[in-house]
Image 1 (cartoon, helix red, strand yellow):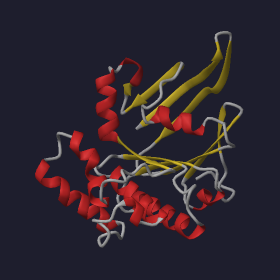
Image 2: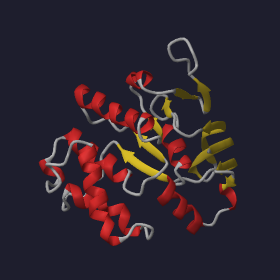
Image 3: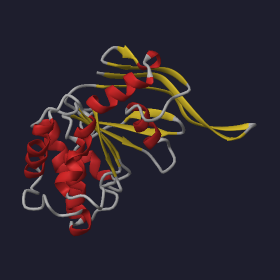
Image 4: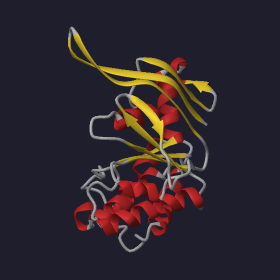
Length: 231
């Protein structure tokens, strides 16, 4: 479904110096799997996730989404794929504090012409129910716990029914109890809803949930062994 072939990315420090962050990264992401991307701070995990989600560009290599080479897509085409294909979840939630949980979940649907206006509220309510927030739909983010805010953010990521959920350190601001709850929700998205989930995390708890772990180190990527077997 998603295939990266020898992707490289560097950043300019000044006119004469660059930092090479990703070097010849190749990996494939298949349907209905739970992927973890791990590595130390600054290893390029978030950059790689942003490239996968068409947020960041890359310097060289090829990236295919459903056999379409990203290099040849227009910005409008990339934007359309990003809206329909991917749902994004971040560490800091990025909820609008002026809106209720229900209104926050509805936001992505406003730019999706494929979802009728009459269906938006129903979809958002069903998603919040799914994540145990049916009694919190009219609460604003500052009236919700951290775990509840992250569940709203996951519901929002699912609003356009994407095939792939990309999550960048989604439990970094949560305690252990909420962390495990959120990872369980992500696992259910794979096992029950047949989604593909890709999570960037520094936490070893991801080994408990992921089917496949990739480790970024010194600009290179390696498949990790989980429970003495590569899943």
